[in-house]
Length: 254
Image (cartoon, rainbow, N blue to C red; front, side, top):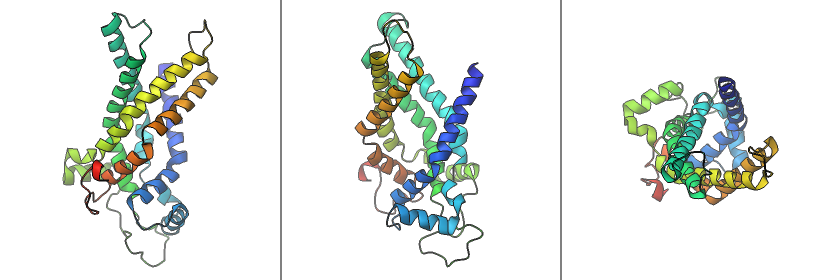
């Protein structure tokens, strides 16, 4: 049963990533490249040169790793919460304190970022490859590459390690930590509070509707409270090919 749950989560996460990926590509390009006048201009330019494939560059690794990131996140959260309950009360059966839930959530965000950072870097590097599709016969565009540097996610990983070392895979992780650590802490805290409020007395587990509503509220609150968009720009620029091209040297300067 656990294997089926794992596979179902992987398929669901992969489909969710694939559905939203074209918009993520547009977001990353606008954040890291300064040649677009807006969202629609970026969409038009991308499709004109790169066709539909251009919106899905770098998608393979995020789809394949979504289950791993989820497992690390929720596994860390549960183990940390178990440890804190044992430490404070001598038993994990006791209802955890709000502070423990927040700390466990922050721990989950820390661990998830360590796994997610290399995946996100490879994704962003490939999303920023603007080489044209083989059917494109228009004139070359200024500032856009004509040939891809990376042939795929594995080649990108190997190239980054060769040129920048292992630490090169973790460019932008400071912004990622600043975003994800409080974000995950708030997410699990708000989820815990709302499921407790909405679950009827005598019922030990929340129903599917209560769980869905609680997750939705948790996502909105954690996204809004943690400067998500600002730190996401810092992470995207930190993962970009030439981090010092515009004179910035770290998250604080972005």
